[in-house]
Image 1 (cartoon, rainbow, N blue to C red):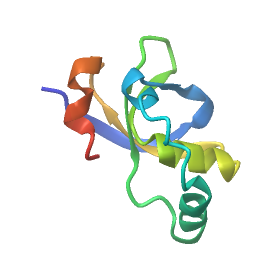
Image 2 (spheres, one colour):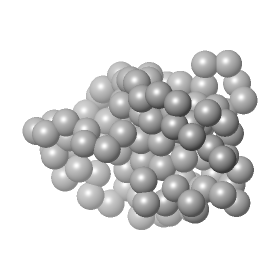
Image 3 (tube, rainbow, N blue to C red):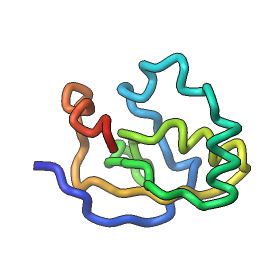
Image 4 (cartoon, helix red, strand yellow):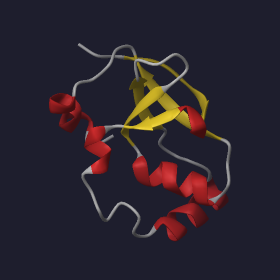
Length: 98
């Protein structure tokens, strides 16, 4: 069973977008509104990441829109919940609600 080991700020440039996050062509919709909310209230729910297999890199499992909003805000880091092991694409749907 995969578990969250820690939560911390990670650099945006250390993220690799997971295959499950590439499936939605509408992920970019409403990013400006989300960015405005994050600017005002902060990020309420961290993104979910796991090891990417490359040193210092993380694979994004959930949170692409939050990631895009942070890019729009020109932030260098993003809060992330970090899983203890790599999640295969087939199991990524288990985290869709995160």
